[in-house]
Length: 279
Image (cartoon, rainbow, N blue to C red):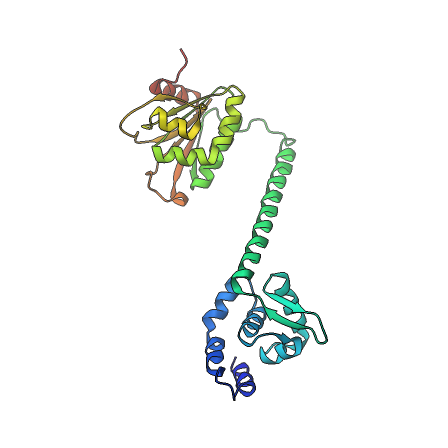
């Protein structure tokens, strides 16, 4: 970096703008911030130099940004791919830094597309593995009739809820707070609608009134129990499975704990308590 400053000083020793340029180049925090966006050290140096000194040829940039000459074209190519640099055709070709927020918008779109592709690949791989595992001989899925498992984190809990909804054939009962209903509907409304289409009865047990419930779920759910007080335990029932949320409502999502129980007797007991048991 010191060598870079000396080069800049030699190039701009008669210009009053030199002091401000030195200040920017010295700002290691700025270079670190560029690296946090996904640029490597050479790319960050090149972009910062172009931003502060203006358009340059590859040779000029190599000298003034202290980039190895064999690497400078590769660095500029990567910056152009990421949306940080534009080139001006000619002899010689010149390069210029694009405004940082324009570059960030391009980078954001690239990452969104990449993430969408990655999620798609994960889903496809999951289907492939699921199909292969069905061919594995198992005497029983579980060793005993009733099972108890602990889940950690809201993402894991919601994934289990999604699986319970997808496998439900008879009934679903959700007992939660007003805030909890809003979260569950955001995460599972489409899945609940599909279950209802299959003929699954969807019940809600909550302090929320019918008008508020309709605004969140339309005609999908029937309010089967209403109480001015919230129940101490939130839970989700589907056919013969129960999922109990043992942590406080205000617990951060990553720390939330749930207990999943496969127990027809327990589910039947809760249904009677809630008044959702069919006569």
